[in-house]
Length: 289
Image 1: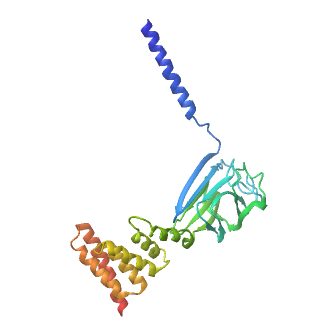
Image 2 (image 1 turned 180 degrees about the vertical axis):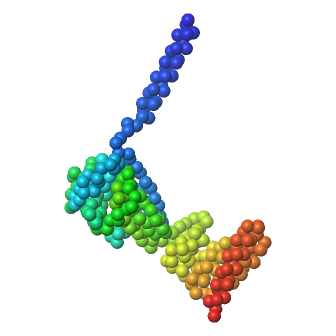
Image 3 (image 1 turned 90 degrees about the horizontal axis):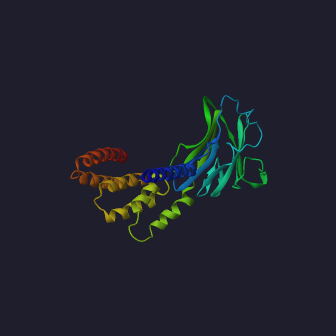
């Protein structure tokens, strides 16, 4: 009997522990789900935190969300957006920091507003004197209905992206631009002066791919090749950089060396760089005439 009581006591303690643990982890469901989206553009970190109401058969704009009135742009707490570096929104410069995103919906044009974050609930305490940036954006009518209010970061490029606000049949696009010369280049150049292995190749390619400074790209790739003079991939990319720079003989020389080194490489690497260099050399020969 004592053994039975002991067993039952252990079971009771175990069940209590499980119940307590479940209670601690339990999240009470909300009517409007919370979302956090993160995106990196160049070296800029962007994060949007917002709550997502559903359409549920209702007429949204001009009814649930009135025209020409300030809106929290979501539900519950004000929508927050964070930029780790300065950005340009629809042509308007904005410093780095955490902001609250408000809008004033219109039938065809929306006002988009960002204020320094004050952890507001809704837009009840909105004060235009606190606006950090304010601009107008043309809205777009969608064919399909978006049931759940959505903010997304799309069309990501090396120095730009789009913030899209979507609900019902309305899409509001906000262009995001990153000034690479002021947000990325200083840190890239600083990395070249640090201890240990210096990223000459990576920085050279950043200059080249973003069309920032082709002379600097060529200089840095040359420095990278000093450490790896027979690197097939670096030689090929050095040829591309010199081609863009206008140094056709130099580009041909680098491409020919890349082609030569590829012949003793593994099967896949040989095939890839034979094809790439053959095509590049044909282009370079056409530029001589």
